[in-house]
Image (cartoon, rainbow, N blue to C red; front, side, top):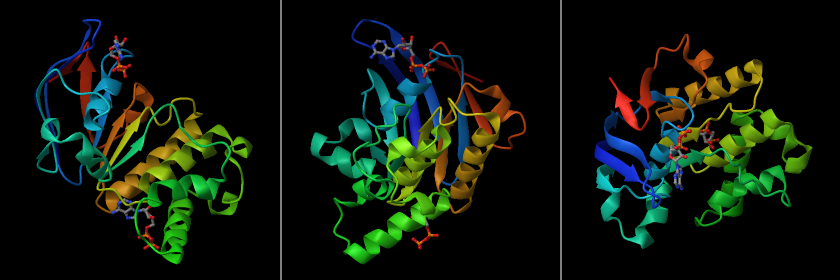
Length: 217
Ligand code: ADP
Ligand code: ADP
């Protein structure tokens, strides 16, 4: 589903954030990406999102070489993926419902279908009762769950999360991880970057470890 072949990323200032990375994430897999701060985790996820382009190497998503995508094709590629990034990018002048609605507004569903989809996604993350609230009124954990609802509302085949439990207490972090597991159980391919080793102690999922831009065996 996701393949990196000899992928390197050098930023314009010359810093090599990823160095010859090879990896494969199979369809339906749930995989953790770990490593110290600065190891290159965010860079790797940004390459998948085509927010950054690789300096060399090939990245394939669902059989498509994303380096060869024309800029106009990138939004279509991104629809296959749900992203949960560290800077939430929630819209604070819109309700919880409207924040989750946003990704669906470009598709031509009727209003009833769209509302049902938004509520199903809010229900999955336990926020159905807060649909009329504004994001400022939510706790940190609730905001993170709102981001997850927004990321899955269009039913992506792939879910990518960057430090999704970053600022959360252990208890809330576990709730979030349970949500990812449940999406994975319905067939979604999940890739989660985290430096929080405690989350990975009892996991049965594969762990990829980055060290200074290189993938450890
Ligand atoms: P992680 O997510 O593991 O903390 P990042 O991918 O954010 O790692 O960063 C890897 C390295 O690349 C860091 O040393 C960081 O400073 C550097 N880096 C990240 N983004 C940029 C950028 N836009 N320009 C230059 N260097 C960057
Ligand atoms: P409904 O059929 O009422 O939309 P589902 O239980 O099928 O309800 O899905 C509820 C929500 O769970 C969806 O809106 C979506 O957020 C998420 N979801 C379900 N299946 C998938 C999937 N295959 N990929 C991504 N997200 C999914």
